[in-house]
Length: 152
Ligand code: CUA
Image (cartoon, rainbow, N blue to C red; front, side, top):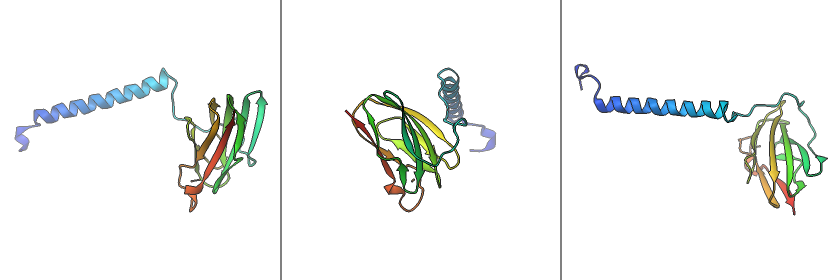
């Protein structure tokens, strides 16, 4: 095709379709952020980084888990809570960046040194939930697994 022939119709159509699609995606992102309040999680700034992992019961059925990630474990683990519990997870790292995904929930955080991340989960089904590091963090990354035990 020479320049004199111009842009073929099909190319124009594909370009318009791609631009419309990109515009639709941007509109959906704006809708999710502005109307539904869904946004990329950020670090919490009102909690100081901590060095000790612990599970604190703050009320009946309500817990705060202060989780420290360190090559190649999560502390404390296993976390034991009764079924129906709501757990506020505060997560940090004592060394490098780790992942923190609780299987069977939508909790998926990054453990970042000198910062704290937050997520809340409710555990209605008893059983054992695996906590998986999903960020490559060293030679035993694949073994970095924690556990949450929800008792009946
Ligand atoms: Cu910790 Cu991978």
